[in-house]
Amino acid sequence: MGSMGDGRAEGSEQAFHYEPVERFGAGITGSRPWNHDALAGVERLNGRVAMLGFAAALIGEALTGEGVLGQLLLMLRWVLG
Image (cartoon, rainbow, N blue to C red):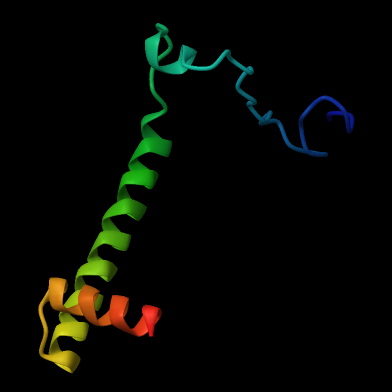
């Protein structure tokens, strides 16, 4: 059983893994492999946000009858008064 300061939970045999702090840009140019699980999660989130944005554009077009550029012009006119 681990103590409180060694990074393991009480009664757990699996230790937490903390990555060392690197200088700026070292993760891209260094020989360390990418964390594929974290990148997959980020890409999944990015795709879902893109789908929401596309759906919002379609809903806006259905409500206003304007395309994307027309919606941007309507928003600009609304903001500027």
